[in-house]
Image 1 (cartoon, rainbow over the protein chains, first blue to last red):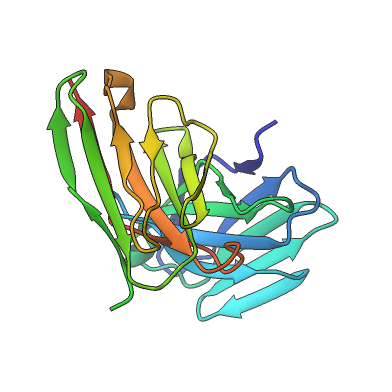
Image 2: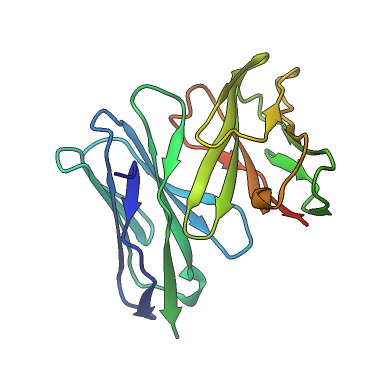
Length: 111
Length: 113
């Protein structure tokens, strides 16, 4: 079982719609969770971090965490063409310094 | 500007010719790490360093070496590159144990022919 798994995509949504990205992780003791956005050929950019159960909102982005289900998600509201990118879920393990990354979900927002 | 700087951005080399990819950060971060990114496989950790003179293997360390002689620098060394090391490489750094996430460098696209 992979440490971090994401819905594989690609995900295509119309402009203005909600894009929903999902991620599950295997280390039950994990405490820190992140979403990165990566444009093609560029480096990952941190867009959200979440540490406790529930929702965290930042602008058009909402991260949701459910530790009991080992599940973290990202919602992008009012999707814009500039949101077209690959989104990486990252989880910091309970026993080390490493961030483990999912393979990413590619989102395309259609104008 | 707070940043992680990698060089070179692009590199084409031949099998067996030693090379070094440099990484430097100006944020006084303790933790630094190297990742490679391949299609369908995501980001995989090669090596990491928790502080000066403290390094350890990640998930895919074979064929790579690192050193951490200064806090700001963490070079990645390929002693004898092979074509299966063709990849996009990222250096990353963070405070403490990485609980606030990483800052990534701009990446190095390496091709070994």
